[in-house]
View (cartoon, rainbow, N blue to C red):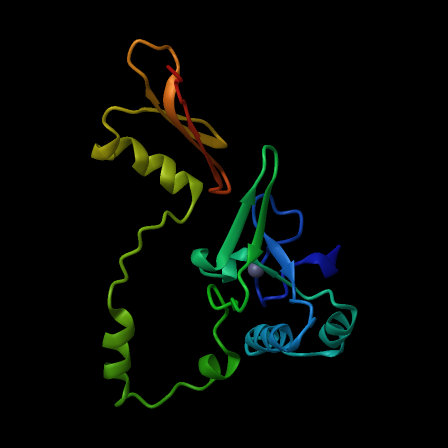
Length: 191
Ligand SMILES: [Zn+2]
């Protein structure tokens, strides 16, 4: 259904997109949550027009925002055996992968003051995160720190195991699925 797509302008995530969390605006259950909801909504409306359809969605509480617009550290992941549930942390706002504001793209700003801004924002950001599952699968086998580990990759999971000497069982096992959720298993031998 069209109403079930991420409300960020130009974003193609739908509620059925596998592995990507998508959430309604926070329920305004108290003052803090009301402020959070307003701030969240205002981030979305900064970069899109608020027409009658959009207003109706606000009324019906069908404004959705997907995980791609949140910093990874702002997303809490709950994992059970079969399911991964993700939730934005209290106060988190959609700030990533947002479209350019229309007035910024339409109206080029005069140049002179810009050089300062550019050097500031052009600073390379070192990120410890892998952006996608494919990225992770490509990089992991070349990591020196995993020399003694077995690495198995398949289409939707990456399994890294360290075998216990003399036992045909993995001592430690890390399983990463294609949504970058992970499970760690540790073998404990009771003597
Ligand atoms: Zn989105």
